[in-house]
Image (cartoon, rainbow, N blue to C red):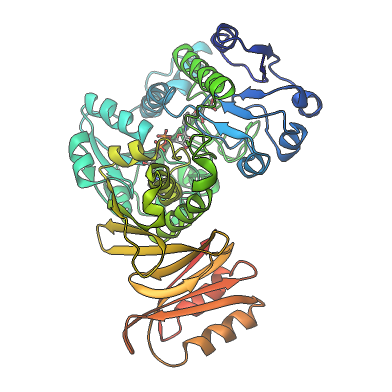
Length: 526
Ligand code: NAD
Ligand code: MLT
């Protein structure tokens, strides 16, 4: 009988599910980190919320017995995903169970901030009756600037419209059709800042969203804007916000999440019109029951039948297909990751073509793997399993084409991405022993292996590029591992793909972008 440990305060409904499914479950919320490391090797599964830190040490101590970690909630910031993958431990989350609850919290926080309810409550209960001190603003007719229109953002948009607010939304994945269906005005980031009376963020914390609302962005906002963050700490620059609250540029803010949690102290505490809650977004009986039941069912499915759902680090493939698909899976992920990292505007369609040997396999998991990697820069919840739904909900058309006869290569996968601005394709094959190789980008032939630190350059086919790049990288102490060039025709569109032994610093990138031949230089990580 599989054995599961619940190390956080999950709803007891999880215990009921495990026991009903014939799984032994120990409920030990608040287990100290060292005790977790000491005992985890006795368990097949670990169910957590956000308090338990599932570190590389915990995963290593799982020692092959631990097979699955289930997160009752969305964010997996407390789980070392890379170490889990290395340890062969599947990590699952429950992406939808607490969305309504969190959206409701964002609306509650917006209202609390608009009417200064927490401060008015404290003053009234202190016997002050300060009736003229707490002047508020109405939500009616105001513009809500919504940043991130995923599961939670969409619900917030709907609720805000119920309050008769206008909603202006910014999300690189928001299609015109989806915006229309949600009844929101699709705007770019600066337009949102300029028109919003209230701003609420609902994105994951990624490199592109960290400090998204910084001093420069706040300066572009309307005077008296109010800001809500019930997503992740760090999306709004706390120091910049503290200054903007002090100067009155920002009239109020309401935060459920903080750059450092638990937030026992924070420079926003005590700022004028600041409302804070201790990461309570998902804290309702309904949401906690939803996520606990869902995570227990998913973990039980995996441990008892091998079925995988909502896994963040594992494709849903049957045991039989796995070995044949494995090298193609790697290639599909690399193509998706490449396209995702170079895509900056709204996606309209994705086509995956299979040619030759690969066309005879079950290509569905390959399409999902490519799609999930393609969309990863925009969501920390997207995975192989939910990638098609994620794309559909955002109005992205996904199709696959099978060409059973080989073309120039015995086996080939080509990924074509259509965005609001361009159509770009990238193709790859497998070399001897199943090693993925990129063989074409934008229709330009190039042959390269993708390695951890790469630099992708689009350039004019003019003399001096190699020398210029070599000098700048050399001066920055960056060793070039491989250097591949390709061009459409002499003097035409050209590209370079460089593998470096380490990351390229921002100042070096700036210098590279200033080279006369360079049109675009983008660091890529694989
Ligand atoms: P989701 O993946 O469904 O949606 C995220 C959206 O953000 C996507 O549509 C994506 O395209 C968009 N996005 C990504 N990068 C962006 C950028 N640079 N600019 C604008 N939009 C961008 O996620 P979700 O389920 O809606 O969750 C949203 C956030 O809420 C996550 O950070 C999640 O961890 C957090 N969350 C917090 C609580 C809480 O207790 N406070 C509870 C649940 C979820
Ligand atoms: C989540 O990611 O699901 C939320 O932050 C809520 C929680 O941590 O439970």
